[in-house]
Image (cartoon, rainbow, N blue to C red; front, side, top):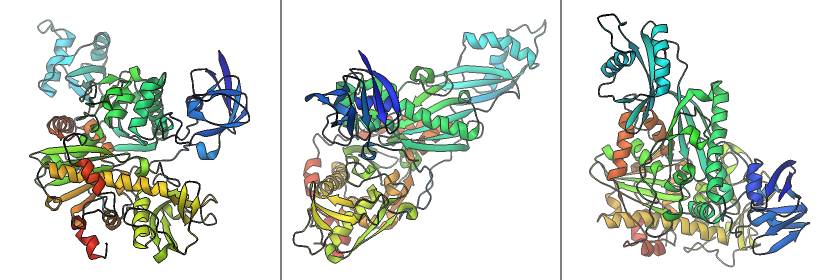
Amino acid sequence: MTCKVTFTPDNLTVEADEHESLVALAARAGIILRGACGGAGTCGRCRVSLASGSVAVREEGEVHSPAEVPACRAYPVTDVVVEIPESARLGSHRVLIEDRGRGQLDEAPASTEAPLAPLYESIELAMAAPTLDDARDDWGRLRAELQKKVPGINPLLTLDFVRKLPGAVRKGNWRVTVDLAHAGAFTELAGISVAGTSSPRFGLAVDLGTTTVACQMVSLSDGTTVASAGTYNRQAAFGDDVISRIIYATEEPGGLDRLQEEAVVTINSLVEELVEDLRAGYDDIRAVYVAGNPTMTHLFLGVNPAYLRLEPYIPAVNSWPPVRAGELGLRVHPRAWIHCAPGVASYLGGDITAGLVVAGLPDTDQLTLFVDIGTNGEMVLGNRDWLVGCACSAGPSFEGSGITGGMRAVEGAIEMVGVSSGGYEVFWRTIGGLPPRGICGTGLIDALAALRGAGVIDRGGRFVSGLDTPRLRMGPEGREFVLVWGSESGHGRDIVLSEADLDNLMRAKAAVFAGIKAMVDAVGLQISDIERVLIAGGFGRHLNLARAVAVGILPDLPAERYRFLGNTSLKGARLALLSREVRDKVEETARSLTYLDLSAGTSFMDEFMSALFIPHTDMGLFPSVADQGGD
């Protein structure tokens, strides 16, 4: 049985059967709802109003209008009209790809010195015309010249290429351009044309993140970046983090297909934006390189991710084979090869291996800590002689999710917070100088440090009783602190931090530091031995380093040892797209890196419990904080 579902105030209607939830139907209509629980119905973010008709709510039975229902667990029984409030919408935004207006850390340059050898390249060849004395076939004549230009090449000859070969060489008077598509262990002869007549060729670099997706289009002839774009990952409607998405993919009927589709639709929306900006053709994009964590890569390729979260936590593969764009529905040339950066283990993927090469870890003599903090916290320690890495679940707090007033680091997000003693006054600064609409991850770290310094919270991250300030009050989830009054905010509502928010932040910051400490302990070193700390990802863009150390998320090391690298996943994807040397280095790094499973045989849980204080139970680890009066 099919029925019609109309979403208002968008006035969009889709046809559905009883097996599709309102969240899935809204996504099909182009409306992405907020969600953190992967369809468990526990987060309450996707609650919508049923204006007419009936739905079946899982484990509750049939519900008739008017009613409010969780869209992730509601399935239409009749034709229904659903009103979607603004609070349930994920919304859209542009992801900042190039850093403008940086925070406290200067962005270090990426390692870019590598010869141009793109995944798709065009080679111009000049051949001698055949004679009675030289009657080699067209292919033998072309292959001989190709091997002079590309020594050692053993190309894959296709029937399509053979059909075009005789006409092209004669039309070009034996001067032609041959297109080579590198696909793992072999090179495909992807096209042939008269020399000087081929159209522009572009490559697409993709950072497939859990929360956001960013793309860059590059010229394959000279390696220049010609356009960039980014947005939310549409999969976010089905869970904030990788675990909730794995659950949705494996337990919800059609869940894997849905998440694969949403990843492709997200990338396609960015490709459309890039192509329109350049006035290029979709078929001009001839190679794609994707860097993502293991879960995102499994979902993008439609591979069952179930065993990533089941002991002993094994991915389907770490080194992915190339796949045709047409197989996935990516809106580029259908025969373009899609390459995915290799991973290391279940929670350390291609976004990190590509990023490590950009950061130069495989080539440095200095003991370096690489940290990428987002929904997951991924850390790698080492130098050219050895690399060890680990990952922990930091939760979505640092991505602006799971927090009452949380948002991404875009214009209008609070990035700096100051609190007067006792919490009576609050001072803030937003990205872009706009009225505040919420608070981003680095702003939350700032707020945590400021509230502790003002005596509003104790070392355990709990509100102090008896404060004489109207900002500390009872809210729907217990006590909460008002950062911004509604009269000052950009949406007319108070922006608050609740006790649940503080608990999430304390757990997130504790997980990150515990992962770092457990990894350092496992290799028999001390925190003080670390010579450089490289911060990757959006987390570092607006980070106040002193505040991050003060709350205990990052090691207490001299500020000059820290550097911000920006989006190393995207930078690594771009470099790998353009350089065989970089691609080989990423593969080598993935093979040589030792993965430390924090769930087995490490001190992680002990370190985690110790880090659930500001900055830590062991103040000896944070001497600069102790010197400033930290108790």
